[in-house]
Image (tube, rainbow, N blue to C red; front, side):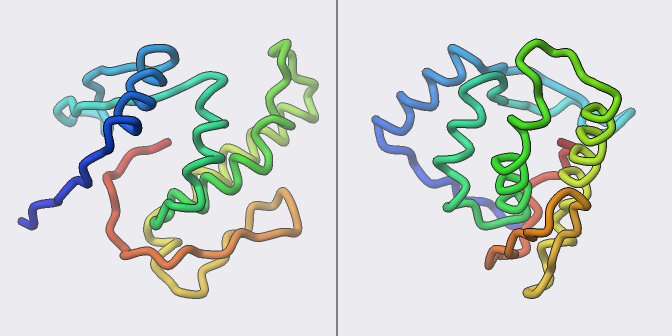
Length: 139
């Protein structure tokens, strides 16, 4: 079993991320798969998550870059501020969710992999990843 080395954050990076987690984040133990043992999860949700994703997306090197690019492109347009969805917008959002979740480590393994989102004509380019699945989370 290979040991993964985690890059040490600078003091500024650590402080920035801590602020995001304190303000908009969650630290919990969650089930990733039904019936599996709980695993540590640190997540950032709400308004600042999209802005953070926009800043870090160019540096992602796994399938998560493809997910990030699609989310950056479509999330705001498919998420009304008032939380009210027309039937058409709700259907489009469901297609968006399916497209995001369809981007998996296996999709990103091929050097010429393309993702058919069914949402736009533009398809994100596959990053040059190391093929290392960074967990098997569903979202």
